[in-house]
Image 1: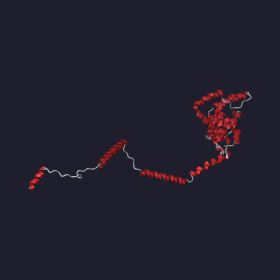
Image 2 (image 1 turned 45 degrees about the vertical axis):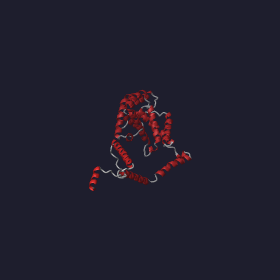
Image 3 (image 1 turned 90 degrees about the horizontal axis):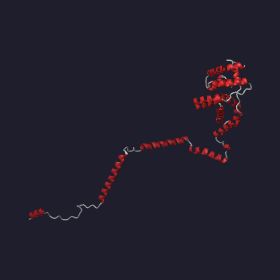
Image 4 (image 1 turned 60 degrees about the vertical axis):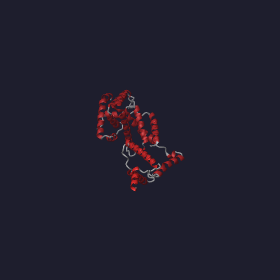
Length: 151
Length: 172
């Protein structure tokens, strides 16, 4: 499709130039954005800050992540121990709290009763069988029979 | 980060074309400036943006177009309508001022005719007429098939012809 005169005339119209005052503010904003997005370069820092940053950068990783396999094995062992402990734990009583409080009260009463009985049993025991015996006074009918029999 | 000289080189080489393209899309001076600045900020923040890019200008035009579309979407259709009304009152000039009155009248009429085109036709007309891109290049830039780019150009140009033909025949 060959362009006609009008099409060529349209395409020949010169576009307005960009305002010259835009250049510096736009480039300044771009440079500031670049500085914000990029961290400070280490070679521009003081030597002691560089050393501290290097230490912080290197030591934690050296201390905390020496071997991924070892850390994974340790984590697996801990998970196994935790699972075994949970499996061996006795099941929690399913009774409601009210029932538990009632049984506690009953236990307390039983305990008090037990203490009372113990206190009673610990008192000096005076049994009639162990007391010094006195000769019983003869009963009239037996005495009479004895007198009759031996007479 | 692109070095300072690299940013300046990009500005010298492409800012004029990006300005014209954005001005034609937005028809608003403040929006054009904001979008151009946003584009250069993005260039400064993303150092690997041009890696693997075959044509620097096409990539920059594509980025500018995406920024303009984001702006349109953020504002929504209602705001765009009010912007269109505002543009009729205080539209930024798209073309350089002409010394002859006939030329000036033609440029004014062309600006008004371009403003009436849908954005998808206006961007294709701009890229074809003032950037000299082929339909294949436009299709790659706008993410449409080349036939669609050609038809959009044809429809847009027909509208411009209908609108400008009487004036053109008169001043020719």
